[in-house]
Length: 125
Figure 1: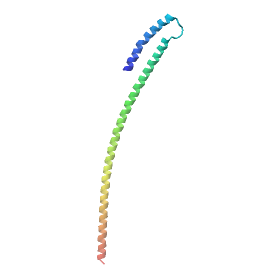
Figure 2 (figure 1 turned 180 degrees about the vertical axis):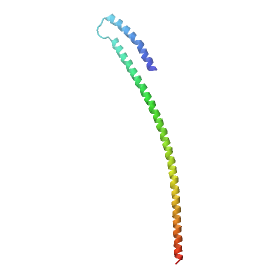
Figure 3 (figure 1 turned 90 degrees about the vertical axis):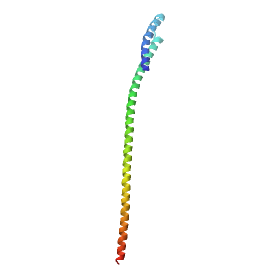
Figure 4 (figure 1 turned 135 degrees about the vertical axis):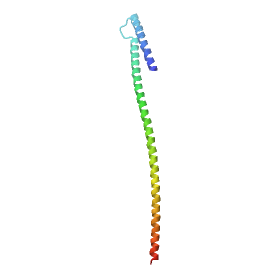
């Protein structure tokens, strides 16, 4: 908004500069480019540069907003994956604990069977 206001201000001032330039030429009758025409060209260049910079700024702003949205989506996706991973770890931990219990039970069962069979064998002699 501010740059557009400056742009329109220069658009209004340029004809005024050109009008004073004609009067300046008529008063001194010089054939070379005077400082006002150079100033006019510099003002035109500055206005054009400001227009292009404003356009580039708008494009970069839109791109920045799009990348911010993509970043927010990626953050939510990473959070979802971390929650899923923690759930998988909990399930895996429970499975490991149950396997350890069954291994202990099997070990005790085999040990008791070995003791029982050994005593039977010893007693049977």
